[in-house]
Length: 413
Length: 49
Image (cartoon, rainbow over all chains, first blue to last red; front, side):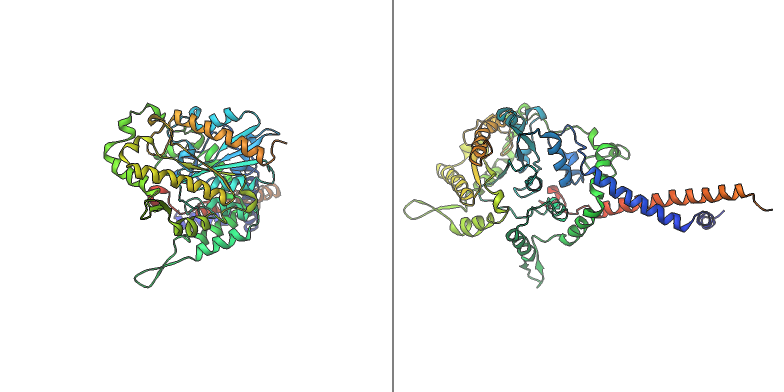
């Protein structure tokens, strides 16, 4: 029997209307199951996102997954503290029980529920901020914490790498209507840089049309929630370099352990290698070298095109106005290990740059503080990330600030 | 040779059951296809930086 004959026999054995009914039942059934999965927390023992539950291994967390985690974790009456930001706040080089957000939870006590939604390389406006905004109506007593470099203004709607969460929430109707932010996102998409060959480069646009179409379809079909749930709880279907092997990659993602090491066990020569020192010093100087210049009288002057035009205007419409006051921006300091290679002038410039950044964030309606300047060498795992001792110190700095904000915002009445 | 009514009913049921299973499989596949096609293509930092 040829293949053609096999197909003909199979075809003859089928009833067209029943096949079509099966397609509809199968498809709609999974859409409904996806909708159910979106309300059910798969990550019951959630501590933080790992490489196996992030886009690093092609797992694209949905806003509903994050909302479900919060609903499962928070107790009645607690103030919600959502932590976003990058790998520093995600707690790279800290074991789950050493995590700074666990220590923050300990210091804040039962009145608060701290949830760590930070991702590696994510900005203030990325995933965690979207989840917090989507939960703003349900949990209005909330504080959002994220970190940034001193002169870094994030893009509204999220970075190119993480903005899928924003569009996911947008098409599911979970975001606060904010015309100013929408206008700025549209302006970013249209922003273009002429190229020598006459074409244009759109730095913020990327694959936005495909992303919007996929997010719109998902708002009806819930395929992301359903297949993420399958990948996390049952079997993974997407091969990726972090989960290699012909069969091993199919294991449920919940089977993969949090891979971050205890950074404090690494000797200082490994944490701060001589070979990378010059590069790291370039990064440290880069935090401030365009922010302040000395005038002929030797007085530091802020470089206003950067502070006014880029920074202050940049942070203006990143969030709806009502969410600014409940946002705490942490300005992450660099490892004190490198201080001895900086001149007095460079250290001074660094200090006033951080102070100016705190002032500017506050001017923009946010709350802000810097940390790390008084940390010991062993508190850092590398130039930016913290070890368990640094994690404890960060929690010591942030906890009173969170309590102060909660008081100021009227959460404690 | 004519089939008995019982056999005809059984054959119809088998055809419908087979058709339904094939349809369900296609429906599940289409749902999964949307998921895979909808995955963002923006590379993570290892590639982006």
